[in-house]
Amino acid sequence: SQTIHQWPATLVQPVGSPLSLECTVEGTSNPNLYWYRQAAGRGLQLLFYSVGIGQISSEVPQNLSASRPQDRQFILSSKKLLLSDSGFYLCAWSRQDLLAKNIQYFGAGTRLSVL
Amino acid sequence: AQTVTQSQPEMSVQEAETVTLSCTYDTSESDYYLFWYKQPPSRQMILVIRQEAYKQQNATENRFSVNFQKAAKSFSLKISDSQLGDAAMYFCAYMNTGFQKLVFGTGTRLLVSP
Picture 1 (cartoon, each protein chain N blue to C red):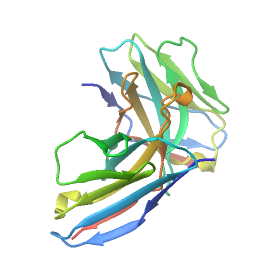
Picture 2 (cartoon, rainbow over the protein chains, first blue to last red; picture 1 turned 90 degrees about the vertical axis):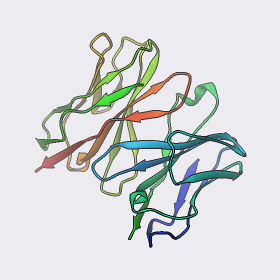
Picture 3 (tube, chains in turn cyan, red; picture 1 turned 60 degrees about the vertical axis):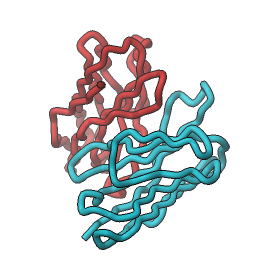
Picture 4 (tube, rainbow over the protein chains, first blue to last red; picture 1 turned 135 degrees about the horizontal axis):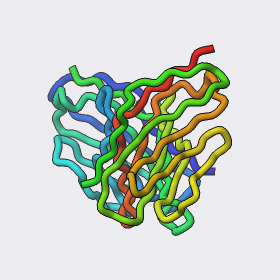
């Protein structure tokens, strides 16, 4: 069976510090990968998605970047965090084949607090 | 751009009763997918139910069913025989067929009382 792992679960960082959140998927190959952010009291907003190694698309301009160095690894980064980067970050994956039914499966998320 | 609206910030239901959560969306596409996701206190998003726009039949998953009204762009979730474990945030989401971007509503918090 497939599983998705995100870490860390909780992170408190000072303004101006760097950020690296990691997401890995097990039990499947060549997944679509996604990073979402959930601000307090809001729904999820898609930040980045990837259909393959080194292929990253950004949905919204921001202080963050994403990379996919391996097939099942997706990393969210920032060189200098802003207060507005605080939130709950969720990684998700989906299958690329036609039987996937467009279903996305989510990780447990990372709560980021920038102080 | 597509939008999803959930007009009920919070709903309450008693155990064993039925509750309906509302969702409307806006799109110019004719073929798309609609989803309901549950987010319990653990905050992990869990898929509850999925509907394909080209299917007229409403999707059902055990105690969960939807009322999909394509012309009205309405997609409500009915939870029957509510259980304490159903207490969570529920998010309605939309996806175009050509691109797997989920567009989420702002969510409805469901409270379940004994």
